[in-house]
Each structure stands twice: as C-alpha cells, then as structure tokens.
Image 1 (cartoon, one colour):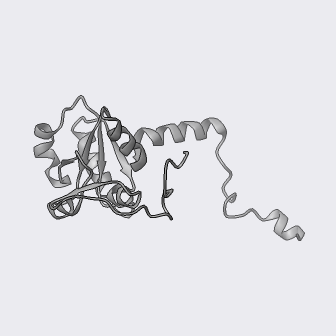
Image 2 (spheres, one colour):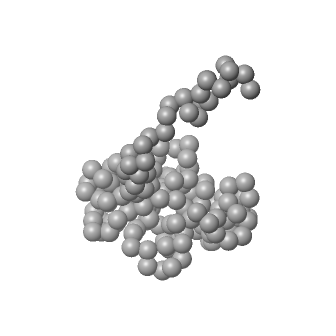
Image 3 (spheres, helix red, strand yellow):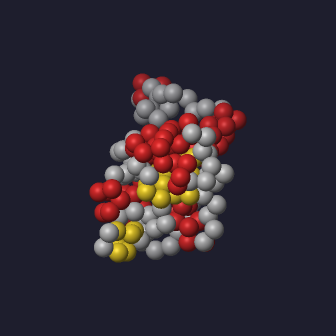
Amino acid sequence: MTAHTATVPSGVLAVAPAEPAEAAAYFAARLAFHTDVSDVHAALAAGRPGFAVVDSRSTQGWDQGHVPGAVHLPTALIPEQAGQLLDPAVPVVVYCWGPGCDGATRAALALARLGYRVKEMLGGIEYWIREGFTVETWEGERRLPVDVLTAPAEGDCGC
C-alpha cells in the first residue's frame, strides 16, 4: 500500500460515521416510520397484528395480487374514504408496488395528515412476492417461489 492510498478515505468513509448516540437516534426514528415485509407477514401469520394493512395501488394492481387481509385504498381516495375504511385508533402499514415507487410514501403522508399513525412497508408488494408470501388475486390465492437473491429459500433470515 502506498502512502497516497493510505491517506485517501474510501467512498464509505469519505463522510465519517455518526457518533453512536446520533446513530441510535436516527435508526430508532427510521424504525418508527418503516417496517419490512417479513415482519408484516410474521405479525399477520400470528393472527393479531395490531395494525391494518393498506394497499395504495390502483384497482388493476390490487387485482393482480395483494397482501391477504389488506384494505384497498388508492392514494387519491384516502382523503374521502380513509374514515370509512380505517379505525383512527389502529396503526396503519401502507404499501405500494416496490422500492422504486413513492406511492406508499405519498399514501403514508396522506394518512398521517388525517391523523393516522402510519408506517411504510419497505419493498412493497414486490418484495412480499419475492419472499414467497401468498397474495390474493381476482382469481384466488397465488404464491410464487422465493427469490433466493432477496430472501432465504427456507426459514427466517435471522435479522
């Protein structure tokens, strides 16, 4: 290793990591706003999750496949229909297509502005499906194989 390469920080450390207390506050706050598909699935499978799941996609997307037991509430309809479909005392987990889509973020914002406690499900329906979880479609239930590049083929990821 030359002296030059030893003194140039990598892209990883070009900005120093936060102090531990700052990092703890950031990550705790992040978890207050997000959850992941595995945790949602585990809570739903246990039978009493303590939250409602909202699919904020269009009817076409909903019909293609949605989380079993989810409420269909497209983002544009949240202001007029949330009060009829959701209990304000129950936290909401909202999802849309996937990580490349801000639809769930927009839906979460709309729900928060109406007074709901809300989290966004990271990965959306894409990762729900990629992790091999069952979806309901207009034709019935469907389950695809686990995508081994995104989730363990069997069992819990251990995180």
